[in-house]
Amino acid sequence: MAQMESALADAMSTIEGAIGVALVDYTSGMALATLGDNQALDLNIAAAGNTDVVRAKMRTMEMLELQGAIEDMLITLTGQYHIIRPVSGKGGSGLFLYLVLDRKRANLALARHRLARLEADLEV
Amino acid sequence: MGLPIPPRPSAPAGLLDRCAAERVTGALRGPHGCFYLLDGAVYCVEDAAAPGLEARLTAAGKVPPQGWQYAVETAGPQLRGGQFLVSEGWLTQGELEICHLAALLDAAFFALPLPPEATSFTPGTAHWLGAVRRVSATALQQATARRRALLDQLRPWAAVDTSPVIPVHARASARTTSRQRRLLDRADGRHTPHELARALGQSAFMTLLDIRRLAAAGLIHVPQAPAALPRRQPGASLDGHPPPAAEEHHTPTWQLPVPELLDTADPDIALLVRLRTALEENL
Image (cartoon, rainbow over all chains, first blue to last red; front, side):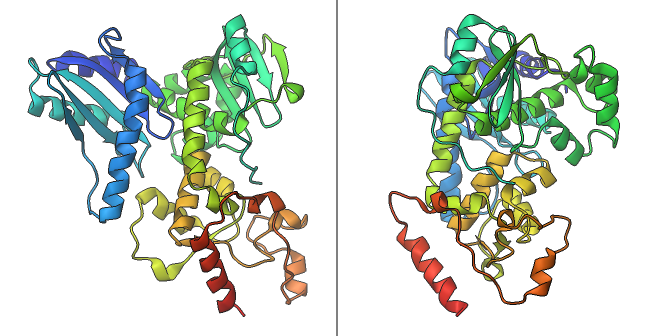
C-alpha cells in the first residue's frame, strides 16, 4: 500500500460521485487520514460522530447474538450516501472507512465494491 | 507492571495546548511517557504502559530479529528511522503510518494528562524514527478523552486492569470477538493485561477494554491470591517459574488489593453477587 492519503486518493478518483473519504479509529474517533472537500463536510467531525454509529451497531449485533461480521453500513440521505466499512484486518484492527457519496452521481454497487478493495489494501 | 489508569484530565488548557500554541519543537517528558513535538504538533509518543512500534512490528513479524536495532544504528542519527524501515522493504509506507499512529494514540492514552509539576521540556530533542505522521494536540486530547469515556463505562470492572486474569471455562459458548478469543487463549493468571498487550503486540487500551468487557461478561476472573498479586511480591518472576516463596508455603496468604481499585461511586450489584458466589464456591 502506498501512503495512506494516496490510497484514499486512489479510492476517491475511482469511485464515481465520491465527496470525501476518511480512515477512522473507532475507539477514539480520530481520523488517521481524510481526503475530500472539507467545505462540503467536516470529515473530522463526521469521523468522530460515526464511531458511535459503528459501536451501537456492533453492540446490537452482540445483544442479538447474530453470527457474522459487519461488511458495511449504508446511511441514505436525501442527497448523499454514507458508507461505513470496518477494516477487518487480523483480529480486528479497530479502524473503519467512511465514504461520502453524492447520491445523484454515485453507483452504489460499484462504490461498495471499490471500498471493499480499498479495505483489502489497508489491511495491516 | 500495569500502571493504574490516570485520572480524567481536568484542565482544558494543558501543557500540550501551550506547546501547540507556541509551536515548539522538542520533547515533553512526563511521569509516564514522553511526547515528541515538531512545530507544536505531536509526532511520537512513548509510554512504558503501551507497546510501541517496535513491539507491534516485531509481534506481527514485519521486522526481522535484530532488524530494529540495525535500524536504530543505521538511520537513527539522521532521524530517518521510519523511512529506513520502509526502504528496507519490511513494510509499506501506509503500514508504517497506520502502525505508528495506532501506537501514538495508545501511548498518549496512558501518558495524558501531563501534570505541569512533574513534566520537563527539552527543546530541540527529536525522536530517531522521524516525523512519520503528525497529530495536532487538540485532536490527540479529544481522541484520548473519547477513549477514556469508553473505558469509564466499564468502571466497575476496573479491578482487572492491573491483575493477571484467567478465563472461566464454563462459559466458553458465549460470544466473543476474535481479539477477545486471542486474549482468552493467552490469559494464564500470571500476566497482567499490559503484559498480554505487549506479548500480542497490540494496543494496551484495546486490551484493557476487552479485558474489562470479558470481566463484565463473566468470562474471566482474577485468580486467587497469592499468584494474583505479583506486584506485592518483589521476588516474583514472569518467566514461568512461580516465586520460590510459593513453593515453600502451601497455605495461600491472602493479601489486600490496592485500595483505590475498590473505590467506586455506584456499587455494581451484579458484580458483588458474582463475587460472593465465587467466594462461597471456594469455602
